Length: 126
Image (cartoon, rainbow, N blue to C red; front, side, top):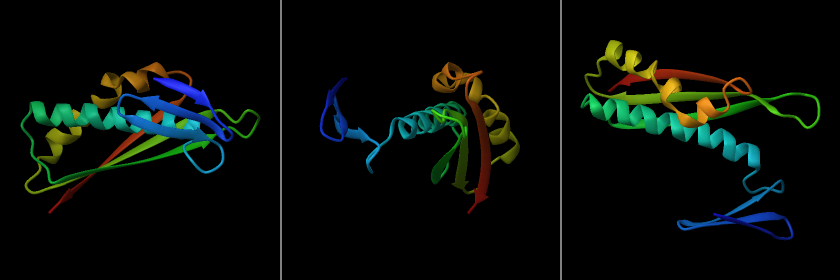
């Protein structure tokens, strides 16, 4: 990956495309950190579900962040809310698998002690 300075901030160039990173309406660095935690948690959860051959129709991950009030306003907490939808889902098994997400997410483990990660799960039977 390459970051190149431009008028607004930086342009990230990656083998899969480009992305604008700045504080003027595109992705901010904190947004990328928040997204990384959410995506990592989601990928771990998908792998755990696949290993148990658990089928679902949809998975939605919503994230939010809480920043400290004092400058430079570091991120103190990231919330990761997963909504899993499907028919005949074994809620007990899925909730047990979900407890393993945090310990297996490399990004969450990388920020452990600096940023609180709160993961919640909602199961919707359809």
